[in-house]
Image 1 (cartoon, rainbow, N blue to C red):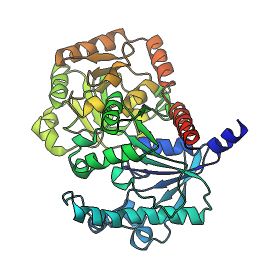
Image 2 (cartoon, rainbow, N blue to C red; image 1 turned 120 degrees about the vertical axis):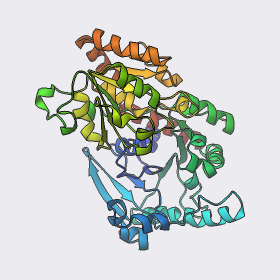
Image 3 (cartoon, one colour; image 1 turned 60 degrees about the vertical axis):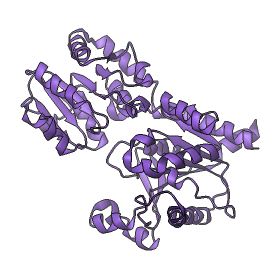
Image 4 (spheres, rainbow, N blue to C red; image 1 turned 90 degrees about the vertical axis):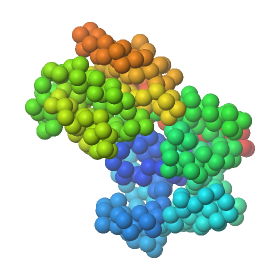
Length: 414
């Protein structure tokens, strides 16, 4: 047992994901890195920027702040301190833009060059930080799973994690579908964030896949008395009840027709949408024409607490389709941590696990009726029960699950 504890506690974590560490959107990969940083030394490798990214965005902060690393490999690693933990953020040199290429020899040849850029920084990390044992954790970036050369220090285990249906994201699906299957077959441990992803990966890899759901940091989203907070300027003059959605507004996921019906059905209340959006979608569905719809746009994750604190009800108005049936939304646990009533569409097996704590509707009419019920029947006691449920779905709990699964995978390889 003493030897097992040493193995469990003594490794470093090299993590690589689709989201870069300073992505403005809430990232599950970044939260995983933060949680591991409480007990392990963590190196968070950015998805490489391409020459195209550099030319188009070189004056913007994400690239400008990394320009030496991107162009020449200098200053490739620095220490980040955030939320009481610290870990290293790592930037590879810029890669070639190749997603437009079809599958075949040319793509494989140029892809090898790109993967070697990540190999290069991993080898630097091993040398510069005297890494003796590590776990390689790839989170939804299968194009960079095969980056560990036979002649370098090998990880204790290789982990692949899926957090979305890769076949439904047009850009990454082009090569991602094939490469995710390959990653799932080659990894020592395969993880999925939802039941449907778990089933899909087990089907293509013919192996056990473990579901570890997304979570939240209750400290960020818990809502003290609004009297102790400053109301965001975007909602200072709203009327009636505040119905809140936070997250990406994407036509792939969001049921815009439902949002329009909510705005029409509740003219004396205000629908507030916080998140990145496509202006064309708002114009297409006429959301800009409603005086009781406030479109805030993207906000830092920590700024969401104020919006949640002043809200009366939270929404998950997702379409039900192939993409959303594979989603365990980050926002559900953020809403619960705030102790706010939740109304959701019935889009996945994962969202149904929260019944009867939240309202899950099968139709637009059912959704509108659920809003009425939650607003009229919600109590302080129900709020406390939601907060308690949210406390069971924290990144601290998920971190324990990840560590246990990794520990088991290490022992299997011994």
